[in-house]
Image (cartoon, rainbow over all chains, first blue to last red; front, side, top):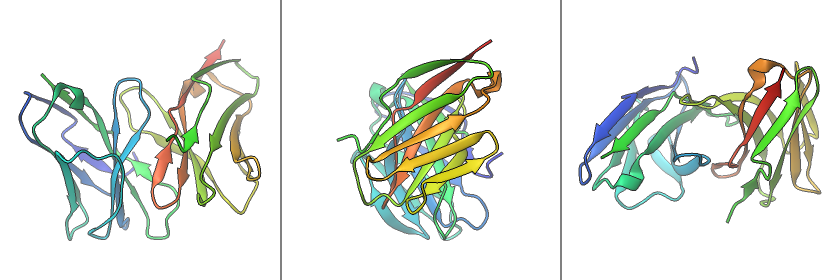
Length: 112
Length: 109
């Protein structure tokens, strides 16, 4: 158990809909990262937050947005969903000093 | 533009022998390198890391080597065990953590 909690574990929704994925980082970690893993692909970096502020951005679509709240949990919002958004979405957190990131178990999103 | 490359999609190694997984990177600004292990439908599990100021880090059966001049790092697993069969991701940290596409390691009995 990495200490990073993601909910829900599975999500099935229709095209055009909007969903919210939630991540609780490890206690004491200030950074939260979001990654997308499509079928047989690597981990694509989406976005990073540090203590509530956006720190770095990757190949995140405009239909996607994220935020980190004062209690440090983070949410990834995916809207106008398309079939191609079906993927595993992972959240990771890392401590203030940096170094390694620890991953949650992921949310499997299926868009039908 | 792939900044972290794992050129071998898969690797098969006999149980008990050494597994060597390779990774190349392009960005000299990376200051920290990490290896993760991943089973299907699970999150990546952190294995071992190395700072850019070092050339070797060892933890039990796992050793990571960094060659900065060649922008190359490798993960050595010795001896390889059946439970090591998984996908291994190399990652590099600059202003964000970038992952390679992974290498699927099969440990043969």
